[in-house]
Image: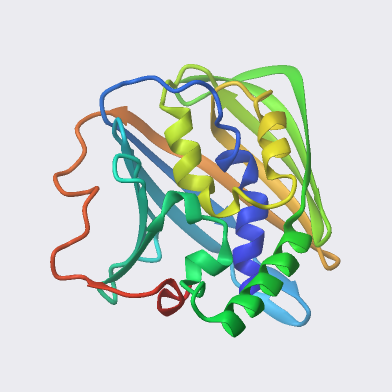
Length: 258
């Protein structure tokens, strides 16, 4: 059901888009987080509770994010390319970083006039659905979560399709390359109306999110999502983590089901 994808992006905005602080050059960085979505029902369709664990590796000019769905995204800033990988099917697609967010270029439809017009209409509809207004309210509340000292923020996201209110706890104890983290996790939303303004607002959040509890209101339904930071470490990335496996077949984005 497509609504799960949309809700994941909406509810996870607080974790994924807070990260425009100046980057620093460090050793390879590993981040592991888990997102739990409570069971919910929309338009008569029930969705079971779900846990999604994701792992992120970042180096100086490259990054890799892998989820529980056996798919990965690799950002190669050194090549100006982003790869989308399906490990189950052993396929991958690629595109220039500058094309991310442009449906026609992402789908490889620039040379098909009719299909390109349809894609342009689709992009306009998506933009209308995803235009957002974000408000961040810092608080004076602080608490220790695991080994991290955190501060509480309240984040409200309003969109035509619904709204989300988040209680977010972020820590400045953790130093990562925030620019690289943003580029990897937000690439597909970068051209959505209001997204750049949302990023500016999210700069009020200082540090990396350790815990966020989000409640989204969509079509009269409340969807609760909790994202928890499980691990952060500076250590060497596994060999080949930023490369396409040799036996994988290249396909178009449309064939990847993106």
